[in-house]
Image (tube, rainbow, N blue to C red; front, top):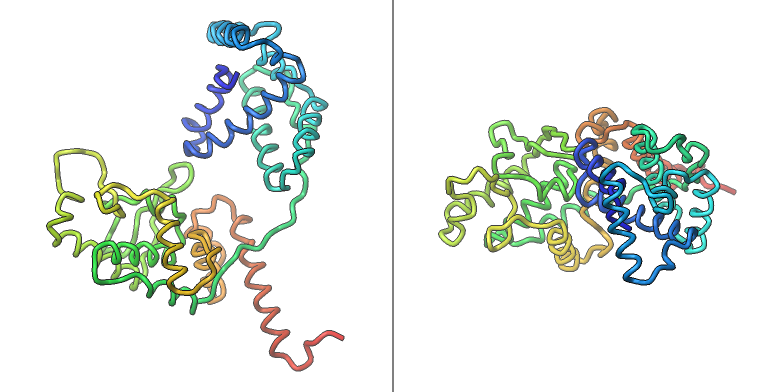
Length: 339
């Protein structure tokens, strides 16, 4: 039942109109599949044997493609769900002891889905308007010190192409605060050496220009220069008549690196540097924002650099810097100790 036209239409909407990534759309789809499984159990749709279920799936898809919703189809149960049905599903999820963050994400999926169905006339009312999202405890993002950053960035070798590539990647992550998905999405043409900046494609395919600091720019230049002078790498950025963009950060075969590969490289250097293995590429992004604010950058500028749509998303870093100021005060002021 996961291939229902109404679900396919929703995921297409997420990617085509909301410009969600394939990964995010898949996560929404997974949440909806769990919801559908709950509905099929509640309405005994799943009681059919394999052959009957396959026949029902086929009949449902054919009917809905023609604009007809069968009376006993899952789509009908989806479209007629009321707030009590949603609460029953949430209670079912609660029994599985999901974290508050996971529950909030699943509620957000249903909220977005039913808002879409209501706008398109599939549902007469939106059952999610009566559902509240549970309040979550705010977790401050993790950041590491400048000294730890310096130690990490000095770890990759500068004697070979792959070592220079890894140093350039880590320098770029900290210098720009970009997401690891944005890093691996960089193309060779996105590097503006003269303007000392990078063109970055963020969430929703929105482009922004971010400055590249002196150390990061020097690391990227050394990496690019060695690639272009090494005959073993001559095909990486060679003009081959193809209009396909050339990735900036590539593996030893000249193919675009994945986010997972970047994480593995970081893990290796964390071990070498003797740093906390729980540090992630996103930690470098948090550190970038925290260090900027600690040194006087204004919140709006940091918001633009991070590519945050809402200022409230960026404001969490002000809590982090305030906490550090409070800790420094408690340690340094002679009258700060509590009784």
